[in-house]
Amino acid sequence: GAGVSQSPRYKVAKRGQDVALRCDPISGHVSLFWYQQALGQGPEFLTYFQNEAQLDKSGLPSDRFFAERPEGSVSTLKIQRTQQEDSAVYLCASSLRERFADTQYFGPGTRLTVL
Amino acid sequence: AQTVTQSQPEMSVQEAETVTLSCTYDTSENNYYLFWYKQPPSRQMILVIRQEAYKQQNATENRFSVNFQKAAKSFSLKISDSQLGDTAMYFCAFMADQTGANNLFFGTGTRLTVIP
Image (cartoon, chains in turn green, cyan):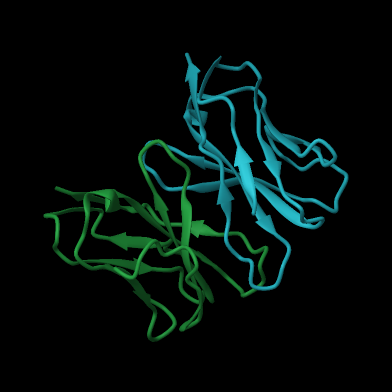
């Protein structure tokens, strides 16, 4: 079956622009995660959804970051008024159930470059 | 707060040889899970192996095995019979065993190169 997909794979934005990053999780997966991976670093947690409910958004770095998953499947991470420090790879992951130890399956990521 | 430390930014190994990647972590939790993820140049993160902290037996998956030392908070990955396809970034990750604490804490990674 298909894995986690993300689009676009690459995004270049001018400072101040808004961007929207899409994640299509594995069909039927209840849990969905967003991570930010800066160059040369490990991924850092941004936010977590269980179905359509955003249960944890403690990792979102500022109120310019917003995520949604309105129908419990596809998720969108939106960054408003992008800044250069937002440049990173944004990874999406999904897992089958809401159990906390389920394996997370990652997408290929979206590389965001803010000029 | 949880922290994961990988002290080897880069390593190399000859094909067919064995290599060990180090990972230490710091937590006040008693129950947790540890993972090794592989991230090839294509950037799709893949789970290599996982360990439940309550299990004393070290996890193994084919050529991959871990040495889990709970008291020392150490979780190293051993790759036997290294293959060219093992070339990748390897991340050690931690997850607390708490309701709602679903996210992974990652180390900074070790870049492994397998030399033909």
